[in-house]
Length: 145
Length: 166
Image (cartoon, rainbow over all chains, first blue to last red; front, top):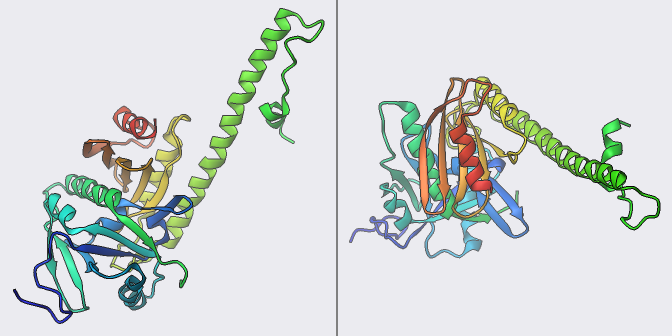
């Protein structure tokens, strides 16, 4: 087994948790106190062909900000939270995950549907993003914004 | 004060059925007025929510007009997409609960009805009349492309909204 600079194995395990850091306030809502939902557009890769995530399995929630903050600061955006999904779920939707360490723990979600009709492609990606958002756990990181 | 407000049900107290000297006809009129007032209450509430969602749309259009608004390289939100979303909102029947307005990284506007686990429906609008949708409804799911002419929401989309918000 090969390992990356972060110490994580190159292969992303089924049980790993992946975080999509949320830098847009409209990408999450709080339908009632203590219950958060992340919105499907947070998981649509457009305008790219892959979705940038961080491998945060094994980290306590309190440490996620450590990895999300640089993402937000690099882009000059506030960090609102992290949408957390399981690697096994991602693969069950016929997507692949590939480690891509420039930044530590970084990975990409690949193999999003490609169609000749851009609208059909969008619709298929929209459904996958909806599945991911529905199953995601949203962790707010609001106090330090 | 607008005349409509005076008809709100909270301001209208039905006369007791045991009141002396009140005819059956009066009771029937009273009942009709009471139902109308309750209906008006719902309209007023919906109207408020509708104005909020229109305001949200304006806010989203303003906040996302520059590229990279999401920090991951998003395209600027298309003004035509916001116009199309507004047309869609105005074309919704009054029974439809107001959706959330969410920008998308390809410059589209999504209208999302999120009623909880496995009950989500979203419509994505751009400048052209072909709108995309995705539905999760329990164990069933669907996606596709529909045509929105700017005036009339396709029945299939209304049915999906009905399914997740029922």
